[in-house]
Image 1: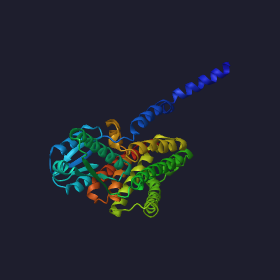
Image 2: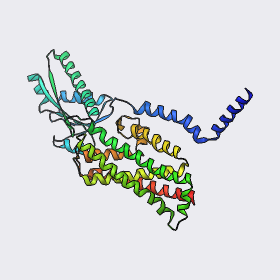
Image 3: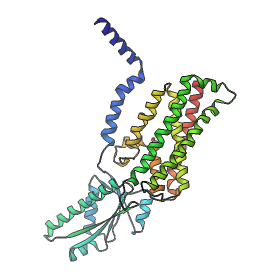
Image 4: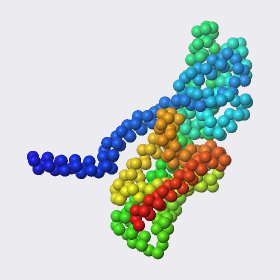
Length: 368
């Protein structure tokens, strides 16, 4: 028994001395419960909507007030004419547009019927279905109020229109997300494990002792994985188009440029992981499991970022996959010109530059 306690005590000391193990054992459950508790939600809140109200009467104002008072919607701006709806969606300002018919209240009182058009961004079909359902329920609630006030069966007919994905195919939503997740995980794992393997075998020092500068040695190891990742990208796009039926509505060249910059970011992130870790198993866990949860939960791949608490929305800004997925949706699904993706291109380019600079400096310092 005494020997058993001695061995157990020794194991405790061994764990407590390893700060990384302690962080995983005690910190990871805290991080996971916070992420899963706040990021995973099927509710849609604070959806920004645009309103076109040509009549500006008492009925339209009451419906707008009820939408604004709910936790699900926020009135972003009012439109001057129906043609501005497309521009509002192209700018990414709103997810839903509410279009009232002319003489709304007058038609409702005289004929008992009036029309409202609900236009939703259906690149995420689940979110589009949810927000149009919420808005329809609020409109139905207003009908019930009128019935109680006038005892007349008024009928407000909501016409629902889905932009970019009228057939409501789920592939339109998950293909960009899966592209971001696959490229991020595969690229980061390839560079981190490959370089750590050289360090474990002791061959990296031999390579750095060659006449070639260390920075060229490291970059040369990234080049094959960059080419392989580009082949993976082409394969994914071919499967998306010909197997899943997801069209490439925008410019294919700029979609490739955006993807190659993202691949460079992921490879640089793997290189950074390799400077901090000395074993292949640890590198695989860090680049695989360590990146998978943030990419799935905080990139907008499955759960809309707008529904998350502000602190998680801020944290999602440093996840490269968020900007890549947003850019792919604009280019591939919505068919927007590259001018609408300049923000995503600039952020990913900046991330690539920072990660490569930091990674190369730390790697050079550790091995020389």
